[in-house]
Amino acid sequence: MIKIGLYLHIPFCLRKCPYCDFYSIPIKFNRNFEENYLKAIKKELVLIKNFLSKKIQIKDFSFITFYAGGGTPSLLSPDFYENLFNFLDNNFNFSPAELTLEANPETLTLEKLKNFRKIGINRLSLGVQSFSQKGLKFLGRLHTVRDIVKSINWISKANFSNFSLDFIFGWKGQGEKTLKKEILKALEFDPPHFSFYELTIEKNTPFYHLYKEKSWFKDKKSEKFYQIIEDTLSSYGYDRYEISNYAFSGFECKHNLIYWEVKPYLGLGPSAVSRISYLRWENPPDLNLYINNLLKKNKLPFKILEKLDNFEFAKEYIFMGLRLKKGISLEILKNKYKTKIKTEIIDRLIYEGLLSKTKDRIYLTFRGKLLYNRIVLLLWENLICV
Ligand code: SF4
Image 1: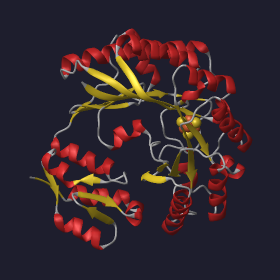
Image 2 (image 1 turned 180 degrees about the horizontal axis):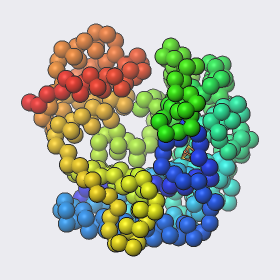
Image 3 (image 1 turned 120 degrees about the vertical axis):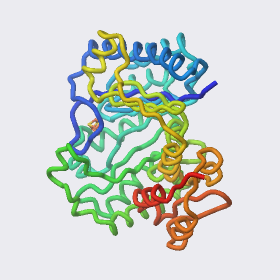
C-alpha cells in the first residue's frame, strides 16, 4: 500500500497581497463558486484514481495527510470540506493522521472554527504575518493585530491543540527590536509550531516593480534576523526542524515532512503539483481551464508529465532534504539513487563551517542555512552517478 499526502489548493482570496505569487484570484465569495469547485475536485479525484491504476499500476494507496493551502482555504465553508471528506471516505482509503487548513484571521469566526474542528480538521496554520500594525500595512494584509489576537483565542476555544503561527519577516521598517517584540507577543499564546519566512520579492508581483532590490534588507541584516528568531524560539523549547519551521517535539507538520523527505504526494486544484512514483506533474494555474477540462471535457487538467530518473530524484532529495535539520544521508544517495557527491566538495563545505557530518548524514550549519540555495547548486554540480 502506497502512502500519499493529499494537498488541495484553494485558489481564492478576498484580495491579492502585493508580494504574493501563489496562484489565487480575488473573489467576492458566494456559494455557487464553492459548489462548482467541489464538483471539479471530485472529478479530478475520480480521474486520478483511474490514471494511477492504468498509467502507473498503483491500485492500492491511502491518503495519510490532508493539507488545504492557497489561496485562502479558510474562506470556504466547513460544509465544503465536510462534503469533500465524505467523498474521500466513501471512495478512497482516507484516514489521515493530520488534516491542516491554512487560515487567515479576517475570514474566521468562533463558530466557523468549531465547525472546522467538528468535521475533523485537527491542525490550523494561521497567517499572522506580523504582530506589528505597521508590518501588516506594509504587507497589504486585510487583518489587524486585534483580529490576530481574537483568532488565536478562538482557535483555543474551538479545541485546536495543534496550530502554527506563520510569519513573514524582513519587511521595510522592521528592525531587530520590532522582530523580537513580535516573537515575544506570539509566544504569549504558546503555539506548538511557528513558520518564519523571509519576505522575497517575486517577479510578476506589485512589490517587484516597487522594491526589486529590497535594498533595506541585505545579507548581514538577514543573518541577524535569523539569529534572533532561532535564539528566541530555541530558548522557549522550539526546535528548528526545517529552515523556516520551528516546533515543539511531536508538532512538526507531518504533511510538509512528506515533501521534504521526498515521499509521494498528490496535489489537487489549479497550480497544484504532484509526485508519485517516478512521475511529476503540475496542473495549470488557471481556474477556468481547470474546471472546463474536468467538468466539460472530462479530462485531467495537466499535460506535462515529467519522468524522474535516479539522478533527478537524487537532486530532489538534496534540494528538499537539506532544508531539514537532520539533512541527507549519503548512504541513501548511493544505495537508493545510485549517486554520490564528490568528497572534496563535502570536505570543503565542512572546512568552511557550512556543513556538518555525523555518520553518513550531512546537514547545514546555521551559516550554511543562510546560503542554502547556493550550497544546493554546488552540490548538484558535484553530483555524480556511481
Ligand atoms: S492571502 Fe495569502 S494566498 Fe492570498 S494573496 Fe495574500 S498571501 Fe497570497
